[in-house]
Length: 217
Image (tube, rainbow, N blue to C red):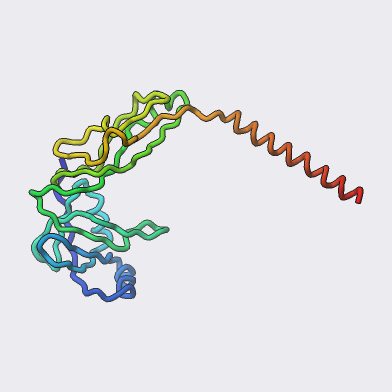
């Protein structure tokens, strides 16, 4: 189950365009929008550090207060990030009711990947599905859903039906056909090296031939 909800104090703002948004970011603020539910959409800006703390919290629900008003439970819908630095540049939050189930996207985390039985024999663990769609109460949405691959052998595949969701969380994706991970056979490094050497020899043989032809001319 989720922990205590994160808190976020924000200040309302009017839509003033990209120039105003850039000014806010220079001041250490992040612009955003709070919408959904029975209320109107509200533009806001929040302290960048406080926002990072709120997003890093284990709870999916953020209690958002605008201009010191009553806190409203909300969940993250979208966070735009800087392409290089990775910091949040804009955020969309959606109001929710704590007694109504919502849909959310939750990451799948593989445990004991390096200690997996197949990995010890040189196998390569490939995670095919990294996120899963779930339905749950806002307070029950987990930070991630885990699966232990310690016993995964070379050639074995993990389907979504083998991944157990926490109590109160329903997985919406096709559990029977969705591949989460597989343990591939080790790639033969010697074969790769032989191919490289063969290509190098071919190139090396062509160069003298070209030089001889030029000399004859």
